[in-house]
Image (tube, rainbow, N blue to C red; front, side):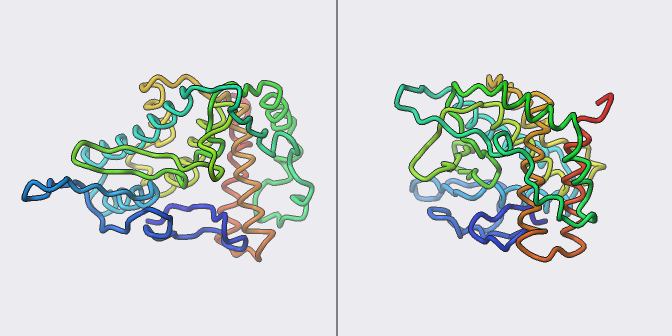
Length: 280
């Protein structure tokens, strides 16, 4: 079960399946569910893998043998490690020398005009561009932006690696910008980014009958670890718009979309509209 990831180094690529060993410092390993101590008193084995690969293995195991309590617990552990790492980043000490991050592009530029040229089969793009509630969501998020804590800026699952050892599991966020571990920003955007990524990348790989909500699970673990930077519905809508535009650029502008691409985009453009629907 492939988890969709957005390519940043292949401008014409849309959904790519990255191998476990294509990132510097990561080790290609077979799928495993646990680690054993090495015989002979040697140091315990430590394995580092991209979170995306871990989630793909986990969802494959669920589809093969069912969403057992053990596999559900492992999913909670993976998301909990990610949440703990994000809380630690948000609580990190900042100084006068800590660089300030830029506002997300969607809050500065709004929705680009080229969206009017996107095929109608790509979903309700025109409705999102014209919806007053979505324009207000962008304005509200921009006006309420609070850049006072250390943030990642693009804390998607593609930026997370998982380390397993005999003492347990831990997560690490790769810097969004080379040489910069973090910038001053609004931590709520990081949380909105994670929830958005989980809803787009992981949730479709899960069987709806399992009743697993990965975004809600992450937020629960984030709060359990002491995180309190919870995004508003307006900010969540702004983040889903960002994802819809970026995927549209890859799938419908930089290449000729096929039926699967258009169906994927239609689902993405329905999400921000659902967030501002009356009664939601």
